[in-house]
Image (cartoon, rainbow, N blue to C red; front, side, top):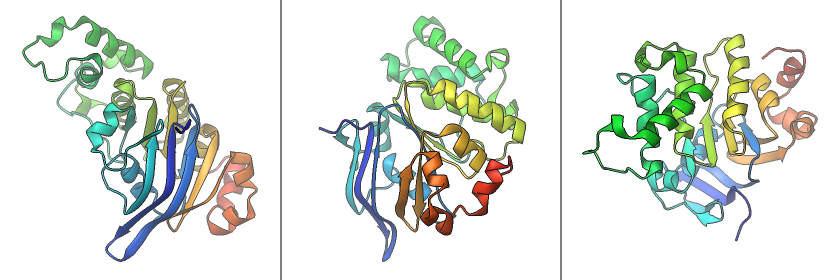
Length: 257
């Protein structure tokens, strides 16, 4: 049985005759933070959709903590320990911060579809929601409707919802997109804090975020992983620079995007 938190073996995905993912192999250790980078159209989002069950692969294996998940539904995969966020913020806009988080913790605490229970009486769910609010620094916005939060606060709430179920593998799709430089800096610290002890995969275009967050970087070009190594090794990889990074690396070292 695999000892990896997440493992992809010769993963392929075709849409009609077009091959989007072309034999990806990737093995992520438990507790690693991995950034998936590559040019637009490289297949990064498709890869996330395959891992999380939105798409089924044409061929190949996806293993979560050693168990094959490539033919399971998204909710089944979630219950096996994997959660993901999306590029577009995905929260309940007309529920408060607290209510969003409480909804997210119910299944993991064993309540499932017991709608006849009064939610206010679920002490463990309420306490867990309060803990999550503090973790994502939204405790002062407890009763604020999600739609009235700032963009960065909404993204933080989505992170809270993503980790609420206790999943040990977290997928974040462009978590800092649309944020200012100061918001991005704070968000990197937040992601590091809330994913301690968890395995993280994130798709990210901002090289400052990538080099500030990732233990390893997987570079995807034309549906293939052309490099998977530490940030330092990827930064100096001539093949990667030629295919994708180039001046972006120099810019990030100088403090730019």
